[in-house]
Length: 265
Image (cartoon, rainbow, N blue to C red; front, side):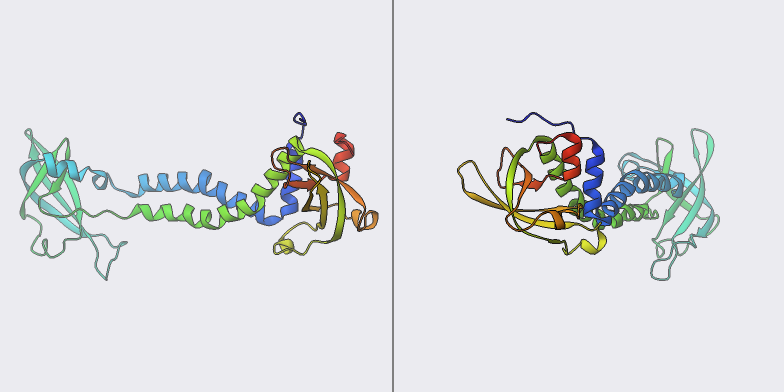
């Protein structure tokens, strides 16, 4: 069994280059969504919401103490529109333990507050320094919509990442642990795969080799070494790495890397 070879990550970078800009776009989109957009949306959610929008309304409804309050002002939230209507912010004042407390409550129950005006007496529920107007539904700007931004980047990012990175990692692992074998060239041609227009130019090599039972195993591999087009032809031999665990998995050994790292070529 072969011990692991020392293979630096520059080779993985070169493998990704062979997969083209698709891999790098996938990496960029994925990491941007994780390391930029999610923290950004968390910050936005913290800054966009007013303090009274962050109240625990379920706890207030379940445990709140009923109190009298007086409306001081009612104002529309003009930057939020649903079906041509704006939610309203109701400012009110009430007494709590002998102190005058001012608070606000935002709602879209426009029919229920149609008769509300400055000076109207209302009932509120107060719990742990938080309050809400009784029998009205609270409304808050749906900040969760900002979390759609990372999803928009993840949706194309993850498939592109898988297209580029996963095959590159598999080959990288063969570079580290694969058995060196000899294969016979079936054909060599410039690669014209579906993603080749986005990739660094490569050469596609089709070959076969023998497994431990002397059965033919067919494989294909790409290389950025265009000299192979002149140096090799059908029937010639090339060196490949073959997985010790699954002899159907193989890749061509790049000539330059093989010479540099003494990979048995």
